[in-house]
Amino acid sequence: MKALLELIDVGEAIRRLVDALSRTLHLDVETVNLTNAIGKVLAEEVYATIDRPGEDISAVDGYAVRSLDTVGASYYNPVELTASRSVKPGEKPAFPCIEPGVAVEVYTGTPIPCGADAVVMSEDVEVRGDRVLVYKPVAGGSNIIFKGEDFKKGDLLATRGTLIKPALLAALAANGVDKVKVYRKINVSIIAVGDELVEPGKEAPPGKVYDSSTYIVYSSLVRDLVFNAKYSGIVPDDVDAVANAVAREFERGADVVITTGGTGVGRHDIVVDFVKRHGEFVFRGVKLRPGRPTSSSVVGGKLLLHLSGFPIAAWTGYEVLFRTAVIKWLGVSGLERHSVYALLTRRLPNVAGYTSIVRVNVFERHGELYAEPYMLRGSGVISSMLRTNGYVVLPENVEGFEKNTRVKVYFYD
Image 1 (cartoon, rainbow, N blue to C red):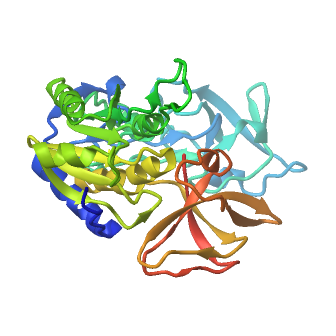
Image 2: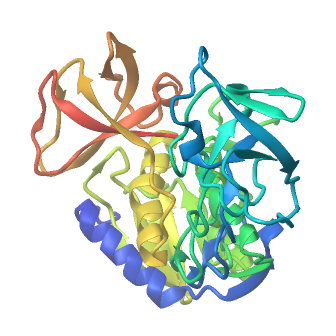
Image 3: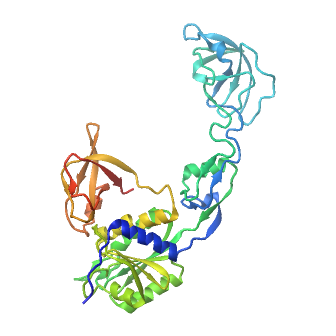
């Protein structure tokens, strides 16, 4: 008979996972081209190498002027200025400072001529030969992007641990940076355990079910960018088969192996026997609903995460425990789930001592956000995620949330 689960709270499970990651995993630093940097995690602080812009430039197409020359301008009483030359994109003004009463045509991004302190937008002027009629006054500094306004040389652009997203990629490129140091991604292999499982695309005879848990975990890993995820198939409820599959994946370069299924205390839940024979548990069971049998172990100096065979419980174990632990271990910023506060449409009870993850659907009504809980129970009810767009966390020390309580909702995407 297998020993019962030794449940620990969610916070302790995350702490143990972070410690296990520190003991078992080292991520090399690699230098990559910008085109290969998106979705990677910075391994160094990055500073601006130049002022941007390098000089005062126009924010719009229009005419560079002395702002005092436009005082009192209106549609019925336009100010008349003299049109003098133009500065085209990529050019630098090669003429003396403009005199009072003069306007110089400029384009978005072109340098501001000496003597000008504002730009009138093209739609606020009328050109008649060499005369420019200004229909709207501008204050000093209007429509000008000043030198170093975007960032100044030496400004910190991003810290180590920042997830590289499009905006940071653009900032690096704007500084002339073509390569950056990043951590390599974490290689994760996923193995489904169970005699009853059949891969999608094959016939499922009576008594068999299609494997879905590995797919919800696999897709979550891929979406979270910091992982290289690999689906490694199904193995039967046999300790040696599991051991061989795990050893094979580590030999092929996996940093972490995730198993789904076989984590309970039944006769056919053989993951426990596998760990006892080949390694040691980091923890065995968590006070988490769904996801109670979620466990972790170290085998041969390598980390394994053992998730439930039920898809929603497997996803919860990944989302709440492993994903959170990896973010803490890497010190990565930029992977936080988008969240909002919404009013509960009904009471949400909790089980004493457990952290509960409740799926909800957020919607807007009369300018207010509401969260409708999906109350159908079951850690294998995939439709609960199809019909919702986020989840609420009920901490272990909370008996529940009353109707109309404003709660924090984390979106799946």
